[in-house]
Length: 245
Length: 245
Image (tube, rainbow over all chains, first blue to last red; front, side, top):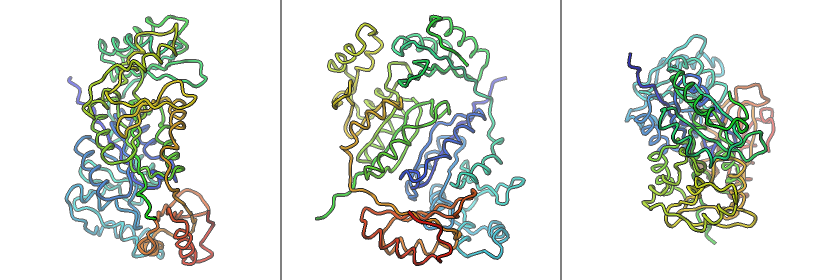
């Protein structure tokens, strides 16, 4: 059985508030972790302002480059919410009112309904409304782009409702912590990666820790990973290997 | 006196370890905050993998788009450190050994010196070595791109040594917290932004807080900001204004 090429993802966090430091990004960080758990490689993250041309170009590029694209932010009812307009431009679609969304919004707000909320019922032509159990609103998707809100608690709920759609073969990781200097490891790690095909990372720390370098090994093939880890373990002098997990 | 156009910045955090969730990004977050304090608008953040073509293209794009570009990560001695090669490619420069850097590295490591460290003495032709008091190593800069390491404690020290070079007229911020719904605010905020030129953001929360929407007003002109804030304050029913800062 020849395995399918695993899917890769791109994350676009939209919002002046992140770039101006008023709000710390939580969404991209959460999505990175989620994709990891799902075996999906996140290939790129972009944090961009609420500006139509920037969002349009980034969405177009990410949509062409990655299997799955998530945008967060810019979908509310106020003047700084321009994500929908930008995504429509990215795919050359007109923006049309969705009677289905309008009905949901009217039902949700009931007596508190204001016309301003109807801005959220206008979507690019061809946008899918993905309904999931327990969600009062559908999740919107155009082509391979999932359009999520920026408010972290709602974003997480919406992503949780669709995450299983993305699951791939898991990526296994092993980590070795050593007091060896990175310079002493360089040749060894390069050779090991070239010969085993396992992805190897090397991360020094200069803070006061019990190790100097964390080495990571990653593969979707658990056997190959174990064999590469064994080889590395045997190449590091015992007294310099602090621990592994 | 006609004020100069304030400088804008782009941040490129390079490292598979961030995208795979093994390490949470600290560098981009820190730099966003630092730029804010310095009155520099951060226009975009990219988190990208240790892949030469991706780094090359991103550096080229950011260098052409922003006054100041910071890269973090990928400058160590191991096989996964490819930032220097990618930045050289972005500016079509050959990579050359720097006798000045080699001397510093040999002096720093002394008896622990290994040839692998010399990888860090190879830089794109024309790279400036920026020396600052108290720093054992210079900071490297090519065109408008400052090349910083990914290890957070060293990155912070290096940025601290150069940050005053970037200082601009400060950006002032006021924040109002209200229990009004975002839909009720939409028209008011749009009008206020259009008429005052003050940048206005509107951020709902659906977590259990004492407010529903945080409104931010920002300007480099303190007087205009105060006047717009006063106008907004008077437009919000008193019982719906929770607090401001």
